[in-house]
Amino acid sequence: MDRTTERRREQDFRSSNGYAMAALSIGLGLLGLAALVWLRGPGPVAFVGEVLLAVLGGFLLTGLYMLQPNEGAILTLFGQYVGTDRQEGLRWANPFFRKRHISLRARNLNAPTLKVNDKRGNPVEISAVVVWRVYDTAMAVFEVDNYENYVAVQAEAAIRHVATQFAYDEGDDVPPGETTLRAGNAVAAALKTELQERFDDAGVAVEDAKLSHLAYAPEIAQVMLRRQQAEAIISARQKIVHGAVTMVESALAALSEREIVVLDDERKAAMVSNLLVVLCSDKDAQPIVNAGTLYT
Image (cartoon, rainbow, N blue to C red):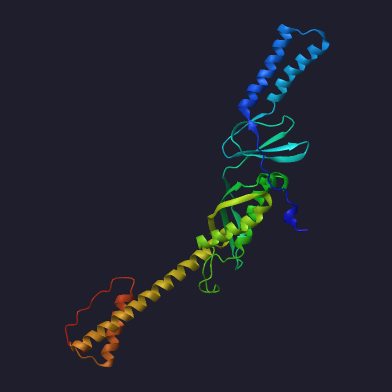
């Protein structure tokens, strides 16, 4: 048999107007008390009837309960699930029903910072904030022992699992274009999907999930920082050299087209060397004025 057909699903329960039932209960109670005090009907039968009328009024009052907006009440009768009432305000149901209130509001779960190995085996610290709410009260109460604890534990497991599927950031051993943990939206979507699959058993819906903390573990943080700095320097140098070569090429082409000066291969090499030094240097180059000829 399919496992999903065995799950307890929420059933709608239509309760009665609490104000009307409160007025009726108070009226019956007062009527019974008034009959006892003033009428004092003859015989034990009349006396018992008056007492029962007063007791009935008080007993009916115990069926009153109040629901706030975005709150539900799970009703059970001697252990049997009757339904869930989501009507806000003062409501009334069978006094024998046991009412358990459950919040339907959105809640935040700030997961603790976890230490996990990413796809490449590097230890990283990761945490997430999850926004969730109960959408099926029967599943939340009857399918799991404690749905709030269930959400916290499964969220931690989902974060650990998602962290192992991605590398922390791009590197030599990561194919170009592969999603990394630093790709916020893609990782958040994967985390939300993972969380929803785990929360479905408890009747909980994931409204949002985002990483709130992501960093290398302290034992490798300094090494990885130097690695990132080296990669950044290499990338910057590559752009500088490419731009310098382009500028030198344009300069030589312009001099040749306009016939401003005619340079042999040796002087071109010297000019290229000087321009590359000026353009690629980290510090300002000091100009040297040649007081002689071009070849001295």
